[in-house]
Image (cartoon, rainbow, N blue to C red; front, side, top):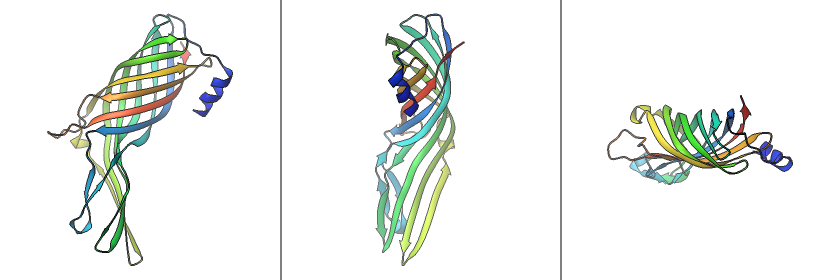
Length: 223
């Protein structure tokens, strides 16, 4: 992002000409949630239910994209990337029978290989609106949290790191929408929101869907 801001101060926008086929390696970050995911209900010591509010979890994204510029206004792009997704919960402190404890770093971590296909509409030189469809293939799924307890000067830490992949659907479908801006270098800043359409969980009665914001920085070059 810092590099892109520096480029923006010294270059004007550019755009590839119609008939141009280009490639763009890219990397960036994600902020993810699962829609309809309830508060975390963890059975604590002494039979106490500890509930913690849902929040977003951060991750990274890395991949590449190929684009064909049909006209000055319209292009079509397809890519492959690996993205960290999932959901998190806020830290919470509690006390049971004189024992003070903290729930920390509670989250579901999902890893996907995603294949986005997006149409780009260049409203003016370098700036594009985009929308399309994305197919995701689950590579990993884990439930993690840490409970730290203290009593009489003694500290104890319990780490939970369990695979939940067997309970998750292997494929995801989402609708990516967003914007991008291409500088003359050409560095491309791309921001998208991926709206999940498919239930992440295999369990009946559950309807958890991926909601992912991503921002990437890429370098685009013609073939």
